[in-house]
Length: 596
Image (cartoon, rainbow, N blue to C red; front, side):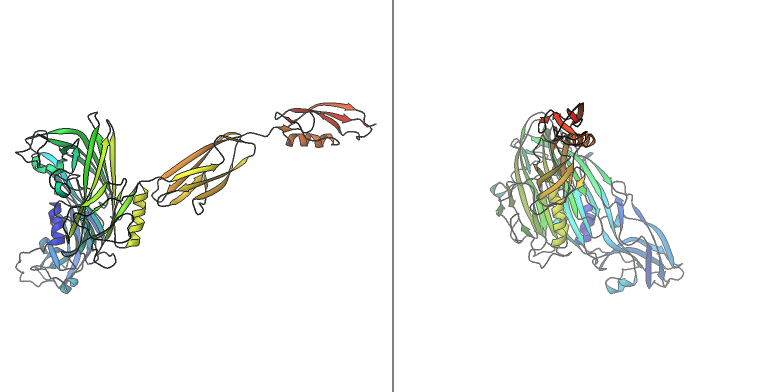
């Protein structure tokens, strides 16, 4: 329901029944004071709840005047009726309207004369706020849940989200002030989107001959991928939950699926006849989807989990689709290491993925000018590179789809994690800011302390700490034992750290632009220096006492003797002898002159 509703927003004109105009005068203008502009509203498609209180005033009303509440899209060229036949005779109105007719819409509310709503310039006399309506619909069949559809985001940006078998990021939207919407990832029709694991997949001669995931060489299916088989014995329903913020413009989704295998397992494609029953593959999927403030980033984590205590081989083809704004246009791709966009079609394949996290930059219309709201730019950011990205759509297709291919071993009682971020923006600079954070969240900064060496023993109360720090994107902060430290070009740093007596642990912690941290540490033992017996000959006793203290020595036994050379009251000699090194605190015996 939600998907079809939003498709109506993007692709269809709404046909309205003509309501006979009452004999009373039609309103000539109107204004809506509530809800506020840019309000994010919510409709729960599972129980039909979700409404908004609309207040305002009209001009030109007389006794018996009625009007219709509509919501305009496409720059006031298309209108959807929300409530009809509202009595506005008093010149004001206050109604509670169900959001069901505009669930999934980004549109402008207006109170208009009954009959065919004015469009274009005439619609401007009927003022009202731009709003967006997020929605949620659960998909079930035969009493078994297999998926969901959730549209979430602010007015300028939004995502349509579904289960792993239906495409986690089913579509994304940039909506400009005229309320026209443009998709980047996927398109709100058909089985396309991002990080998809559908029923049918394959590349080249193997196209449409296998499922998107093979486990131990057998086709395996998620609930959303085989929604037509929910009544078959052995079907394991999907489980999911949502956590919305108060404004319903952010959502976190937690989903659990079982990968199922047909009986007999060699069957493809699976139908009610060829797949009379199913069994659990022994591998389950935990998927979490999270949207970030601003509606420009969706994060998807797909964790494969062994649940039967056996190791499994995994062969996965993750579908990634990018859509152009209109027919005759094609999206562009910029793979890691490339510096410009290019269109792609089967049998194009990219295999030169660098190690570690990276991003594929995409643009809605490769033949367009600079990125804009009407030509959004995006990034597919991944935590691990695939073996290849293989295109399966034809030349010139409005929606281009590639399959990112991974082959992995899932250890017994272990997990495999495929982590994605999908970012969308209207300019290259804005995307770069988003993409860098998303790429950097898959990496921790690396910190090395070169000096002092670990387990160093020092006899000074401070030590100079020097080292290097590095990160794939950039370090935003470095802290050494509570001190903020400036990182110089090349990642070099140096700072003086105070020590306390005994064992000291020096910890250097770097934070990257995504907020991830990396640390390293060394231990340093601070010991007071030994007693180095100073030269005290000729010193007065008070002076000798102070010198001994500073030298780490103590004053020992005093004796007296006559001396022709040393004045009375001054040191003749010390024991142990001057210049020798003794244990700290060693007491030094002195001979004091009695004079001649």
